[in-house]
Figure 1 (cartoon, rainbow, N blue to C red):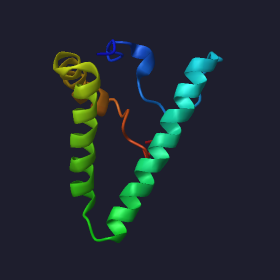
Figure 2: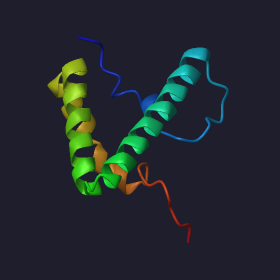
Figure 3: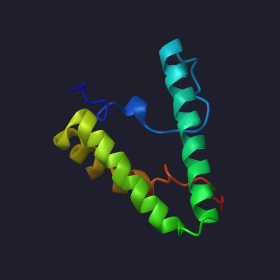
Figure 4: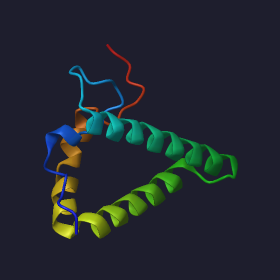
Length: 101
């Protein structure tokens, strides 16, 4: 089993460029995350074109993601990660189109 990356604050998902110059590994990982997000967005678009509702796609994606995390890191690290999700959601970390007021 791999060591858990979940407690590391540097792994907070972001789609914007970092303010400091990242090292090569961080830049590669960020590029992979952006590519993965593009693949997922395209899969969602295809599913919607096939008549699958967005919330069904999202629930299936969450299940698949958490199953992959548990298989890779184990149940406890993933449970700790999931416990922090409400605060991250409220801070807007998963809001893509945010209207500034």
